[in-house]
Image (cartoon, rainbow, N blue to C red; front, side, top):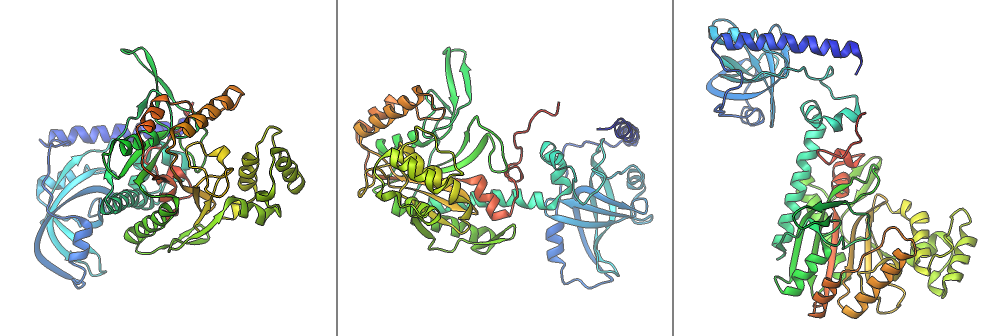
Length: 497
């Protein structure tokens, strides 16, 4: 902030503090404990939509909100509450003397309460003729210069309260996020899923391959990790027979970089269904997302940027190997060894650097990421991912190099991930052991050994399908948000200094 701007704000704040003192001198508490509201602005706009111009009712209402416009020394005020705006008209002879004195001390940004009569002006503006007015909260700092919105994007995220005050789009988007969560939760409960809670603090950061945040428990004198995924605990609940279907709306944390699609803390919904496989979960994903879109937006077709994305089922279903073949001309299903895979990839895509120790599955996954992802605009289930990158999924019944796993993409983003869950404890132990070996060889993101989970599996887990959906990205798609920071109320930000 420039020194000149800082001095201006200090002056404005001092002027408002002086007004605060004057309000108190009038015997009014500028920060009262309570106020009884009878109507909201949006409800009044709806209820009186048929009221003709130049018509005054005898209906008395009490409203409250923030002053967002103040014209003609308070004669006309636009009052904003959570439902919308309404005009307040004040004049001598109607507004009592005490309220007139308070009106002189009202600034933009203040919260006020108003009692008055509903009318519609000659120009068609629904208005309340104020009879009484009181201060509910004196704002000591002014609103941003332009009420049309904050031009400083970073300030919108750092001071979200200002963004919400001045940007209707932000308020609508975050309200829709809440509606999306409610619709999603309602859908799953209606399908017989039991909502559960699992630990955020874990002794072993499992359920995904990612860098965890590390903390320390003083009393136990032991390290703990913020959850990177709830998967292994949810499977324990299936093993225990708590329910055949469980889900959790969970906050997860990964100690990784920030981008328009990544925030260190994010929200997922994970669900597990006994006696189901990944084909069942493809159906579930399509139905869930399309019905949530319909419930919140009234349509299954959404616009993101300049693209229309159609979530109407059924969605495309293609294997990762076939998609890579479409873009590279190489059918990796016919290639047997790691060396042959690396050689074929280098020949087909010389612009892509292939690590010399890459396995067959890692090569396929890399080529998919580099050549296919950017083309997946419409919802697509990418099926049958390599075993090398899927330590928790069942081996594919037709090709042991693959797993019964899919990732769902839309607008080039992964929005869902699901498996036919591995329930063979011996196989799972060997997968974990392989991950540990990769870590010891220098790999950064691997899945740790979790012996207690192996023990749980040895008590028997029924055939189970598991699905995770990234809430933040889904909300981005359904609300046309350019950045993940737009759909998280308080995103992680670098220190200003």
